[in-house]
Image 1 (spheres, rainbow, N blue to C red):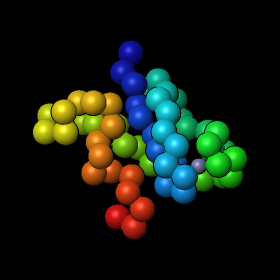
Image 2: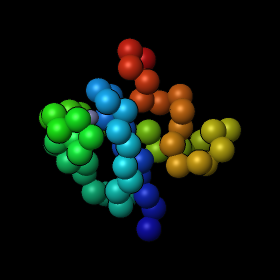
Image 3: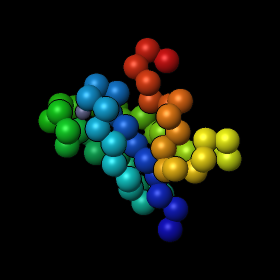
Image 4: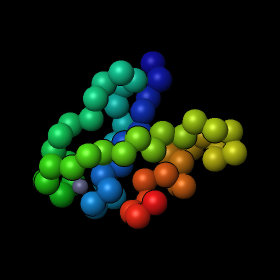
Length: 60
Ligand SMILES: [Zn+2]
């Protein structure tokens, strides 16, 4: 099963979920409601390390 990597833009907390599973509305890191950003690595040039470091940066 493909995994998706999500990141909280507020505190930087990341976690993985199964593909097709929506992220929770409340962050487990900062305990606040937040909109998780999908930072799953999709492109070969990011190394497929699970998370694309170029994604999920505040202000981008
Ligand atoms: Zn958070």
